[in-house]
Length: 394
Ligand SMILES: *Cc1c(COP(=O)(O)O)cnc(C)c1O
Image (cartoon, rainbow, N blue to C red; front, top):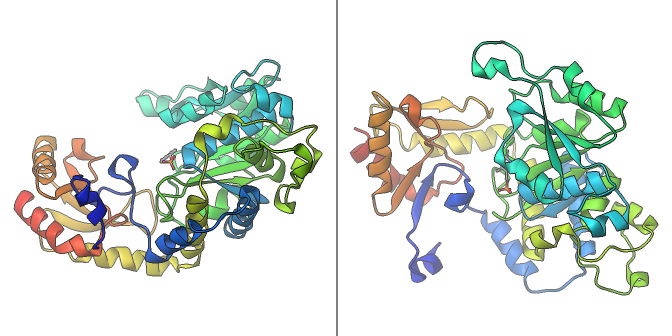
């Protein structure tokens, strides 16, 4: 069978994904080595905490963190990370979540960093407390939340500071970490889409974050429903025990060294808050293999591989040009510039009306731009994509 034949047999229309690893477009494509590892893992059984210990070793190697687990996506990692910041290593608290009575449950968030992925914190029982007036974004001012305002907002109800990683973030992560650690509270970082550059795998941990979340299904090239939670051993251990199935006689559970703090628990919690976001062995193995491949590939070679893909589109339209992505070093885009937003929207609609439908990055369509992101493209689709651009973007 050719790639995707099962989807055709199910009557699902295939698309050409030039948008990127978006969840609604089914993420990206996995390397044959990752697919093979998942298929192999599906044919044997293990105890899940032994597999997560192997994941922890791979994640530590790639990120520099003390421990790590594979989760059902970055959003699940955020939920588990939030649960860990609230319950810590108290099994009674774990059993109570999302009821947070008697525990710190507030997550301080810089107002300009609010986004709907922070629902994951609320799903665990957390409450979002916004800090600062980001008038640099609304126009009349130049400031965002200040370090002083953030420090002032910490109370004994604060579970953690939640930080959305990005070049725009203010205060910067090292400053946020200094403020949080001065008061003994952790910093939870959403770095879901902060790859490339590959250096970012280590950067946020190196800057002092207590927990960092990455998507497995974006640039890492792992399974679409996988993610990483990396960080302090006590917090990652708390997260793990809230997603494991611990329906066994307690004496039988011996935590691996990677999660040693779990051997100190007063008792084992039952199915935790993370039970609704369980990770299968196939995803865990797929993520481990994909992460190793991503970390091992020379960033310049990866960038050249993506650029070669987009070069196949050069000349298809006078509107198109190869440009670097503004936010992600090493990621090239094939940018198409139209006279105005309406012209870009017409081209986008024409591309999506084709068979197979062509989806391009439309995040800047209001500025009259579409872009081809190379990450989720299939090399075999490049001639079809060039034809589509030739016909719809003249
Ligand atoms: C993609 C994304 C997520 C969710 O990641 P999943 O792996 O799809 O769960 C969370 N936060 C941000 C900022 C993202 O871009």
